[in-house]
Image 1 (cartoon, one colour):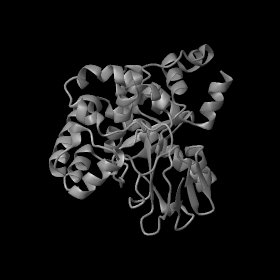
Image 2 (image 1 turned 30 degrees about the horizontal axis):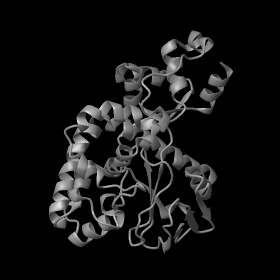
Image 3 (image 1 turned 60 degrees about the horizontal axis):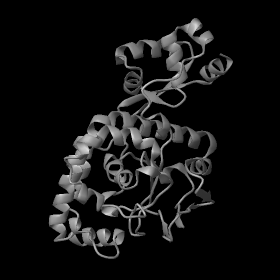
Image 4 (image 1 turned 180 degrees about the horizontal axis):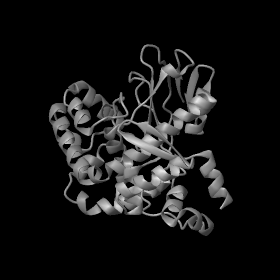
Length: 319
């Protein structure tokens, strides 16, 4: 069990962040064991041809049977607006001793042949492999992925504002609990340590490639909790179920489909992709629904996320 002693039981101790690099590295676990990530199978099938040109031997060596990854590849992010270019560039200066130690932590026996050698050389090779992996398998889908992650953060912020910090942690994962000022994360492994967030804070990062809450392997790393993002089940959906006929007759089929879809916060771009229409058309319907009080909106970074209001929920239930 990992325990983080919060320096103060208040919102200022906690920050949220999104990391493209985290998603890239954690997704390697789906390549090693696809059966544990059934909701990502559409993505795995779609990217299978692109993966044939990658250095899969090296990429697979960055995880182990327990699905651990090296801590230096998932540093604590500091912004919900992270860019993969910046994060990969920041890794270039990773000290050789850190590279060697973190790889040995994941593979405590012998290192796989693909990651043996001088740490500086191994680091250059793995960063090049990750860059190629991003370009082939992530860049075409990142807008859609980021929308789900941003929507999760908006939702968590509402839970904190309405019900408090403890309720937000309980909602994140059943294996996470805040007792007074100590955050307890129950892991499947024997990994155990206790550390304080004083002077460092606690960063929370939603992920599309985590099945349960996770923390850094080493207690020397800054306090950081990675947790499964809400809405993963909708990530690869290309359409929505037929809306209630009574609702479609009242407000039109297009707007009824939008209202049915907006159970979770979603951006205009994501809605356009899922409904196969232009963002301009989506915006016209969203403005009408919001003017009628059926939707609310919240800005998160560069995106505006739309979500059914309480009135919208009642309309859907009534229909």
